[in-house]
Length: 139
Image 1 (cartoon, helix red, strand yellow):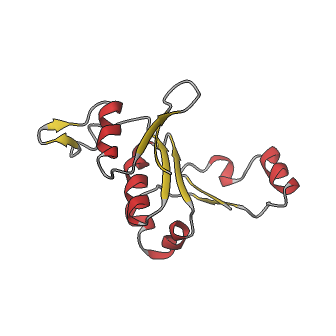
Image 2 (image 1 turned 60 degrees about the horizontal axis):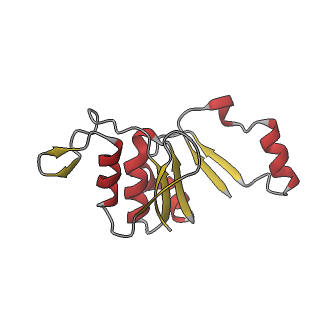
C-alpha cells in the first residue's frame, strides 16, 4: 500500500483515471490512500495518524519543501528507512538551523550536511534526472 501525505488537495485527492486503471490492472485498487495534511512531527508522532507511520516500511519525500526535516526526524525517531530529495532550504523560516555555532544553514549543500549530521547512517547520492536530484537516505 501507498499513503500520500500532501496538504494540496489536487483533484479532491483523487487519482487520475490512468493511475486508477494501473492499480486496478494489478489488483491494487485499494492500495492507495491520501491524507490531505502537512507532514509535521506532531501530526505523526501521536494521535490517530501515528499508526500510519508505524506501519510504513519507508518514508519518502520528493521535493517536500518545509516537511523535509520533519520527515528525517520522524523517520529516525520511529526507526524507519527514509529517502528525501530536498529542494528548498527556507533559511528565513527555519533560522534556528546551524551547521555549527554561529554558522546558519543557508544553502542546499549546507542543509544536506545539517540533515546528515543527525545520524551517521544517513547516506547521500545523486539521482539520474535534472534539477534538484540529491537524495539523502537510510537504506
